[in-house]
Length: 187
Image: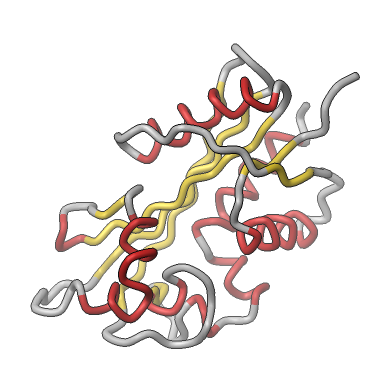
């Protein structure tokens, strides 16, 4: 018996967002959420998510989707990148907004890296979505993670202030999930 496709994450907000994006794409892709602890290597966002997918496919023993989110500050030459989770966990949105105080350039790129692996030992497929923007000086709204401080380029509201569908249409995660969805439809 083949196991169902599993989205491997302990972040219920990501699960809700991914399912909302899939539903808005009229996708018939059905997935379950499974929380697994898999090692996260240090490296580029591509290396991190690909290693995580391969390890998750072994741990789950079936088809998996994993993601990793990066927030890359231009003034910091792309950091914190895939290590943003530690920053947001320790500082919160308000603290994160202030790490760029003193820098003239507050621009940033949000990156969602999704990876699919059909099972143990199978090739990992990578899907990247990006959204350029900037880091606000104060937190706005009550979204999850760093949504209250990320202002997409050309917009007047942070991710946290936007309705879900509006955010999904332009977000890094929305772009990556739509690419993943197109691939999954070919299976």
